[in-house]
Image (cartoon, rainbow, N blue to C red; front, side):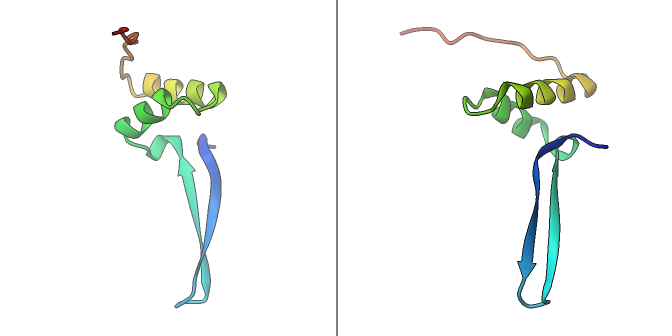
Length: 70
């Protein structure tokens, strides 16, 4: 099973009278979204590790840089 980023979401389409299910898989996110979520302070450590594992799977190197104080 693919790794989920967040739970699936069902949306109701009034015109058709049907529901559409949208899945949020980490493998379908682009590189910029992955780095944005890793750098977000509200992201849980468990999710950050999943994101880092995805970057490693794609063979993208992560370089950690500490912010410099003014």
